[in-house]
Length: 101
Image 1: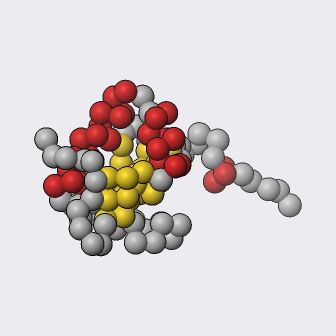
Image 2: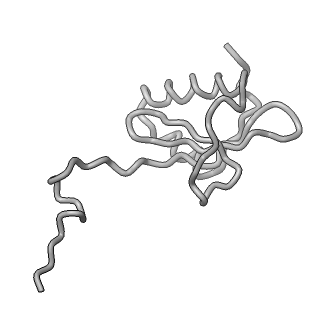
């Protein structure tokens, strides 16, 4: 098991971490261990709200954005967000709105 003591959380990320179900926290813990060993293993985020961040998923339905420490080991968890659920076609999404006119 890798030392994750050099991983810090933003206040938002710490709050969200504490709200996760135990199974999700365990999944997050495993991924933090991976980051401790190989901080650049996850892809760069394509979300412009988090420039310079990498991202991974914690199932079900959360994304974790983090930055790798430039000057040494460790990482900073910037945000943990719930994903928007993927609605199947016909499930009442905006794409079904039809305006006659």
